[in-house]
Image (tube, rainbow, N blue to C red; front, side, top):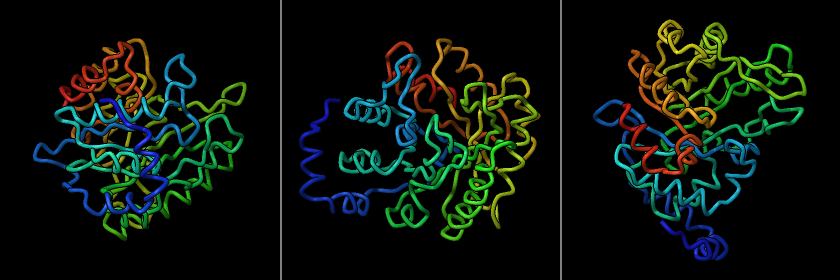
Length: 293
């Protein structure tokens, strides 16, 4: 698909109200279809300054290319929807590609990649009232807990209030929890050991005054065989996240395939692994992921 960026910019400049109009007329669908599974494409990385894919530091910086890849992914059979920040979802609304799709707003993007305040992950994206006003279907928040970083406490409290705000509106919220730490040099690293993922699930499941509308967005553990025991930590429905792009895409598919058989796991939310696959074929990567469901 080739996009006319000039026309998109013209519409934004001359008729900003077109975004709200497109949101109002968007054809909605239930969160879960008849199969009871979810396949969501994620594209909320740029707003946190995370533009890299593999060894390409600015791969996601070309917005036209990103939108083309997203439109292609959303057109593939079995893809249920998209997770993104307001700027990208507004573009997709104006392009008219969100009818019949699940639309998930990304809520906290303030923990900029590489920043000293990265673990103080403020809610700078969609608010619960925005998701309700735009008739979107769910929200997503990132919760990284570093026991040595006071910023994690601010994020934890803010996340709990976001869970409350979404539940008050009857809107699902997908919580993506990690136990994290600072590596030498200051880089934030997520601990994917079975014990750490288990702890993160327990913490995330207890956020807010009710868990009725809470889903979990979970990584596959370092040892995929641990996932069966790890997911027993909570009865909340969960989706798997795709993680970083690697050369061993087939290995990633196998990890997802095994975890998707577990009782609480209901689908996949994958971003760069599908939008910028190692082989370059977005359609093939998306179709393979859909096939795992």
